[in-house]
Length: 305
Image (tube, rainbow, N blue to C red; front, side, top):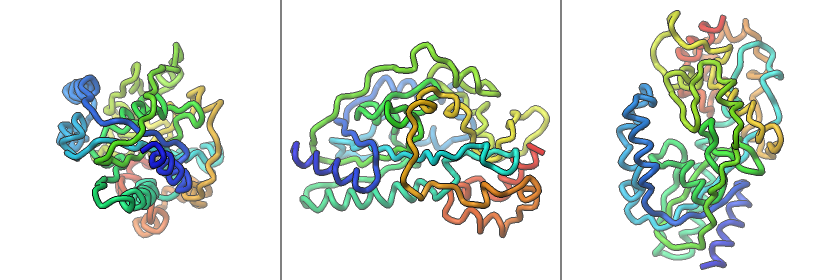
C-alpha cells in the first residue's frame, strides 16, 4: 500500500496539485461541536445550506458510509497580481479573476479518482470541493497540509493561504500523513486587526459582518446600516493580503486557469457602472462570479459609488 500511496501522490502532483496529504477517516467530535455552536450563534448568516447538511459535515460517514481514507489536495492560485493592478478603485477577490475553481479542481480530481479506481474494481471513491458537505480545512489539517489560521483559512508553510482545497474520499486504506498540529499564527493578529467590519475573532468568522459574504452570498438589498464594502464588489482578500505567511511564502502559480481575465483588470468605474446582463454573461462565462448574478454584482457596484 505504501507504493500505491506514493503513486497516487505523484499522479496528483502531475495533475497540478501542489499539496497532497492523506488522512485516516474517523470521528471529528470537537470540530463537529464547534460547527454546531457556530451555527447556533447565527454566524452562518443566511447560508442555510450549511445548517441543512451539518450532520454530514460533522460525520463523514453520513455523506460517504464506506469512507476509510481521505486524500486532501491544495492547488496554488496566487497569480502575483494585486488590487493595485486594477484600473479602477473597485476591488475584486483574486480567487475569482480566472476560471471557476470548482470546475478546475473537479475535473482534475475526477481524473485522479478514475486512475485510482482503475487499480481495482473494489475501490470506490467520491470527489469533493467546497460545495460538498465536508469540513475541508479540518481534513487538510489531519492530512498534514497546514493549519487553520486566525482568519479561518488554511495556511501552508510553503504557499500561505492562497490554496484551493479539494478531496477524494476512498473506501481503502492508504499510508497516512502526520497531522499538522502546530499553530504558527503565534501572537499575530494582523487579519483580525485589519478586517474593516470586524468580522474576525481568533479562529472564527461572523459571516454577517464579512465583506465576502455580503458581496457573494447575501441576497438582500443594502441600506445605510449595511456593512461598508470598502470598495470590494466581489469577495474580499484583506485578511489574506495582510497575513505574514502570504507576504513571505506565497509563490506564483504556473496554472494559467487562475490568471485574471483582461476586462477585470482593464475595467474603469464607468465600465463597471455600465455593465449590463449580456456583458456580465460574456465576461463571467465559466467563472465563479456567476454565483452572485448580474443583479448582485450591480448592487455591490452601486453600493461602492
